[in-house]
Length: 412
Image (cartoon, rainbow, N blue to C red; front, top):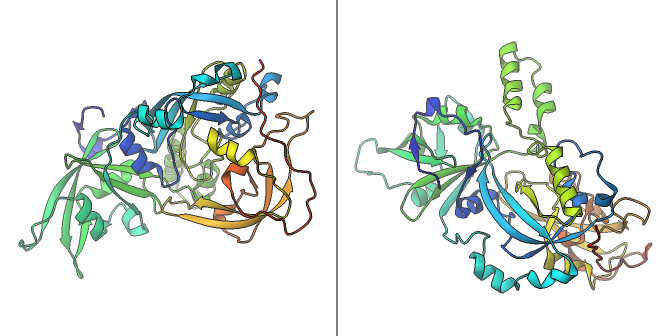
């Protein structure tokens, strides 16, 4: 962790480059479904999934890229960062494509976990953490933050309740090592834990809205840290929404919204990397050269780098058929819980031999949902490793033959 610096919240600005952070903070802030890959472990890279990560699809890709739908890789580096604009945590992962001849380079899963401490960089220390989704009152820059009692008891130093107005000033460090002085008090009717002085400046600087999640963390030395998960609901999805919502704003407010987007602050899942960087990674991977990917554990991102064992279990030995019943866990928009949804396989489709990424298993299962939920939006196509089988026998006759075993190529 970089050396802490103390600065006035009114002058606090985000750094221009990503901030390296300990793995323990990444895990606490990433959300309940996020996993960092293990060093020297095996993964499968799916360029067909990676191409959807930037705001616009990369163009003019070589025919070699489209000829390699699945590329086996070894994880050779995992680095943990906080986004300089949004405070969101992300990973930079260096992958080395491997061929059948170099498969022995992989460590067995147990050895890989032991080598890396089980989390990718040897940092296995845990922190106490508590996450709260901000209410409208919390996000009001003229108000206060209501601290749940459990959070106060778990994270904050105890107050002296013998005092008439119990209170203390907390020094809380964000993921960029900026220290915020926030007043913690216990007052009101009924009495409640509150963050008051300094809170509105924190709200303004971090551009907080209701639905954002604040994560308070305490390390083994008792130091308090804070991280964020941004609200990724459809109501806060990128520039188009912000501009549409600007109707009725004055010109100054509109300029502030547009400036926010220009500075790199986006709530759009696909606004975090350029199409050029993704295209470069895809071309290097297709040529069996080392390449880097960036992974934000945001809700709704289709996985493009998957643990090899997970893919192999679901692709080799399982015959998927139309009518099969399956279930899938989805993380909700505030990353507070996982919900299981059931569906029926309605179609099995893989690209034909004369199409890009022929025979790719990525999102090969078309499904019909039992439930209608906003979380399920745009999730009618899923990959086999995302689902669990509920019934092995289809409820209707299969309309397609059983799928082939996973096939990967190492040609260049």
